[in-house]
Every structure is written in C-alpha cells, then in structure tokens.
Image (tube, rainbow, N blue to C red; front, top):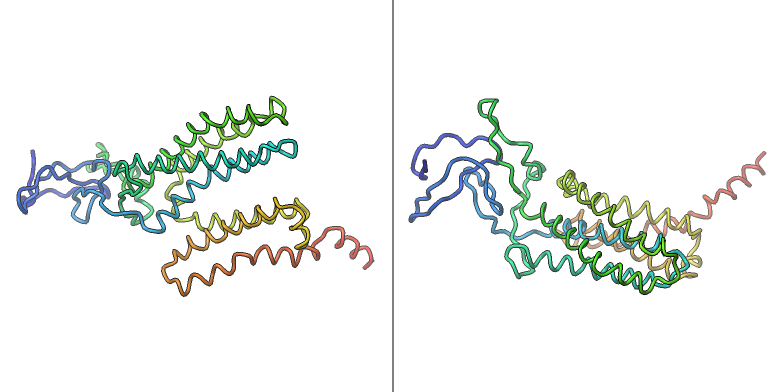
Length: 314
C-alpha cells in the first residue's frame, strides 16, 4: 500500500530507515513503506530517502587520499625491505607501484557515479554512526528486525574497496613480469617477496576499512602525524644519522626525509582543513621541526656517550 505526502503516516522507526519516493505529481510525492534506502541515497530530516547530490568536501578528499596512500607506502616499504643492496631494480619497482596505484585511483573515480567523470557525488558525513548503519536496525516489537543497513556515507565506504581491488589486479598483471625481467640480482625466492607481502596486506587493509572505516575517517590526521614521527625517528636512528652531514652522505636519506616531511604536511593540513589560510598555513613551518630537533639532540643521547659519562662519574 502506497502513501502520499498528505496522508497521516505511522512513524518510520530507526535512525537510518526511510521511505523511498515512488512518484512525484506536482508538489505531491508518493512514498513507499518504511525500509532501507537504495544505494546512493540517505534519509533526510523527514525520514525520506533522498539522492546524494553533494560533492566530497576537502576533508573527505584528504581521507580518500590517506586510504589511497596506505597500499602505496606499504608497497614501497616492502620493495625496499626485500630488494636490499643487491638489486638496482628497486627504483623501477617503486615507480611501477606508483603507476599501479595512480591508475587504480583514476579508474576507480571513472567507474564511480557519475560514470566517466573524475567528479563523484556523495552524501555528507554527519556523525560516526553514519559509517555503521548495520548497528542501528530497529526492532519495533523486539522480535522482528527491520533491516535498514545502507551506505549513509556514500561512496566513501565502498569506493575504498573498489580502489583496493583495482590496485591488486594491476599489481598482479604488471609486477610479476617486471620483477622477473629486471630483478636479476636477487635469488629466485626473493624476487617476488614484495608481491607476496602485498597479498597479505591488501586483505588486512580491506578488513581495516570494513571494521574501522568510520574511526579512521576521524582519526587519520593524527595517525599520519604519529606514525610519520615514529618511523622517521626509527629510520634516522637505524641509519645512525646524527648530524646534517650524515644526511648528505646518501641521497636515499634525503628522499626518506622529504617523504616524511610531505606526510607531516599532509597530517597538518588534514587537521586544520585549511579553513582559515592566514592561520593554518604558518603551521606548515612546523614540518621540519621534528627532524631538526632529532639532529640537534642526537649527539646528547648517544648510548656510548651516556655510558662513558656515567663511568667517569663513578
């Protein structure tokens, strides 16, 4: 039985349950029964399913950029980890990984609605529960559950899965041929270890997005800052970088440093959202601060120096 907007309707229970618009006759809309909204729609304040016609805001794009960076950074880490000093093919593998992820991102945007355009339409994220609509299915009589699970944050939740799928397909098509052809300095068992690693971390990233997508949406700027600071400190300590001169010895160290600076900047921009440029842009001057602090204080925390001074004190 269909109901129109002028009829008295029973309440549509549930935080995310709504009525779909079946037809529009002038100013009168005809609605269906209360239930789940179709994909690409979410409920308005009147519990009516409305088409998502907005565009992602700056923070949404920064979140998608973070999720797109995760597999790329992991690719680069494992390529570097397994190539070691034996192979000169690491750079080409890094470029290939960047190419794979870039093409996957472009294709993902092209297949998203509207198809064939790099622009996507989206629903506005209002609160954390928007990411977990499956937890808010109502039970009016405490027996029967009305299932209203849908993507209220369309398409921020599912677009990440699509991107990971394209990344995986492109990697399996391109990387094995490349590695087999150029990774001559590695043993047969070591050649494909970076690819095997990807076959592990892609399922992990998928589960992470499925379970913690909403939490990541709100926490990713702080995750970027903390992880980039920790990894930079660990790298400089492991590489025994204690002065500016040590940084200039190898170009690779400068590349790692500048990469971390880019991550610092990304995290700061994500936190501030650059809403007020005159206030937020000066914060980018803090980007080199952690590295400078480390270089200026590293000589005072050298374990051998601390032990020797302790011994002299006795």
